[in-house]
Image (cartoon, rainbow, N blue to C red; front, side, top):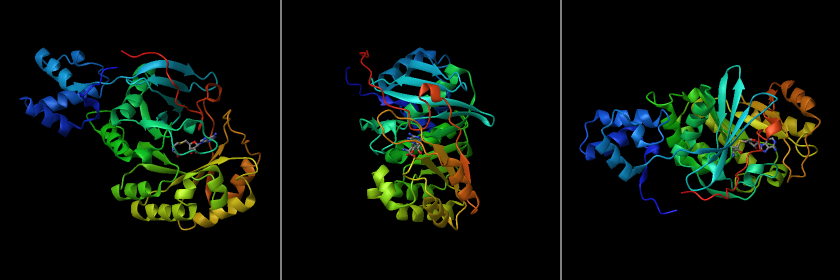
Amino acid sequence: MNEDTRADIRSMTIEELTAALKEMGEPSFRGKQVFAWLHHGARSFDEMSNIAKPLREKLGERFYIAAPRVERKQVSRLDGTTKYLWGLRDGNCIETVLMRYHHGNTVCISSQVGCRMGCAFCASTIGGKVRDLRPSEMLEQVMFAQADSGMEISNIVLMGIGEPLDNFDNVMRFLELVNFPQGMNIGMRHISLSTCGLIPGIRKLAELQLQLTLSVSLHAPDSETRSRIMPVNRAYDVEDLFAACHDYFRRTGRRISFEYAMIDGVNDSDRQADLIVKKLRGMPGHVNLIPLNDVAESPLKPSRRVRQFQQRLESQGVTATVRRSLGGDIDASCGQLRRKAMEMERE
Ligand code: SAH
């Protein structure tokens, strides 16, 4: 592929677009017009019928509009969950999952091509990280999943491939874009961001005081176990992580959701349940227990103590729910998404 020096127009805010168009001699309303097209699924400048052709051509010289291609679409026979494999313009592939809940349709998007966090139970990290996703590439997952499925999306979870806080600036820009009233207009309260525990990112996020829901992938409350299954714990120890979570709650007033994939004989003991209770004291946390999903490369087995563990937490005042597994027949459940190499040549 020839090197493309044009700028990624779908990652720009209305203000940036307006400024760029002004520089090209255009009136100030033009930025809003172009923004509206870009956020309602435009795949090319030629679709922008209220923009004169010479300007469309000039825009095409300076900017590109990325639009991922559906390389594969799978629909679960069990629950209608839909998994998309998108081909990006550089030939990389990522996955997005669309789920139907009674509170609305939720899209689970990827934030990176691959992941460098190395969690022992997760398919997304096999092969490491290739690159960060651009704001436009996160937005396009939401926009084109909605367009393709015809299902109005009301909620977004940043729980697909990648570590969102390892791609902090692009993720923040994506949140801003998807939130724009002239765009997809999805409110922060309808967005969840999940992290494996990058403490500096959690602290930066706390300062921004966003109304989103922060989810923390805990998976073990003790350092020894957590370091064994999550290498990130060696850099950011769980003791410091709990402290950062308490600070986050104090600053934002927002309850954190803790994800906990239950692994047989590793993190499912009563002692560990009791330690979670102790560490969450003083903060209204919510623990989301996830029955471990199968990842072929991993020897770890699902716990048989999920209900007991849940009861042990609940009986000590910590709310705990068991996450319903969706899309199990199409490998669309937590931890099962993976980057796929694409052999085909792109233009
Ligand atoms: N990198 C971020 C976002 C991924 S969210 C994070 O770690 O939070 C995906 C969630 O699924 C995380 O909580 C992850 O730990 C969990 N998960 C990964 N593999 C899993 C598996 N095999 N079974 C159940 N949950 C898994």
